[in-house]
Image (cartoon, rainbow, N blue to C red; front, side):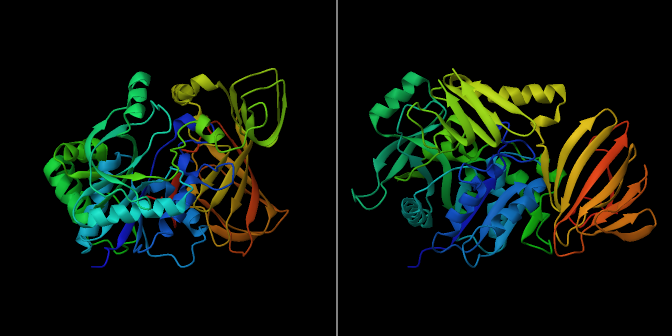
Length: 491
């Protein structure tokens, strides 16, 4: 019997607040470059696409991340890609709704016998061979109707992960193949003492958050263990049944808001484990959820004093310290056990023992209304990027770069005017009722409450310097009339 087709489903939505200031809401953890320059999302996609028998790659992500996700995948060198399918959420509702909708949409397209391989976008696995072996094991058990989860053998008494208690073995002791056991129960994040006990016992594994199951099997499990989730998800899926483009589907916000906010662990897997329906494939591959700066630091080599880092650093009388400084020199003198993360608009200095509290910084920034919790100085948009160069009372200066063939929306601002100076390429400008080209080293002025658009009709990137003047310069002072990226309200 042939193995069922494999459909990896990448869940990409976590904010990664413990990795601020590099991870922020507008550019969250999956898009954060690692020390080797690649992002976790790119690594996850490459890992999934390298598996045999992949029929489709499904990604569930926020609507705002669609274009950046698509651009990330375009840079993954895997030869010919299988079809890509994007399921776009208006806001996050945890993993159970995402998986339920992915399964319902697959079932509606006659893919009930496919095996969904659920992969968080922000995990790091380097051993592709061992990962593929575990997936093949999981696919075989999932094909028979089991709900499969992947467990990671603990290397230390970790209190930041959930655990799974393994029961009876379901496979013979074969050195070349990952062992499979019945899942006895899922366990919450333990205390330090309990984590030590789990490590010593030997039959507890870390809950990786990765799963494999047939489409029809997970739909059936949802019907039995989480009928409320399934019932609320069906109208969302039904509303997409007649969508003309099945490769990019946006969930209706009002319908999606009615779906319970709950993880697949709580909704299904814990209850299914009690019923004996869950099996654990114990992965022998390396695994990290890269959930803190300590985990990021571990990706770089240490010097003789235990210092690690990325960028140009000077360490004098310094021990056990990690410095992330890709843009300028950072010098440390007479310090120990610190994490220092330097970005163009924010710097983090934290003791290694308090890294879990970095998320509290994000909460404080939100409470103060400071944009640094959400935006970097350079912000990605579907059409390109903008970088805030300077900002002061009643003015803001940006550098805007527009990709070839791209255009900003036709828009208007109530409370600011804009001066545009072209420094690279030729801009095609809509300014009120006029359309015209502005070549390099020339400028145009956009008055308050004037419809305007910036477009790059050339084959090279377009760059302008924009000077905004007004009594309010927030990004939300914008009225869109037309937008090729779906950000304008329907007429």
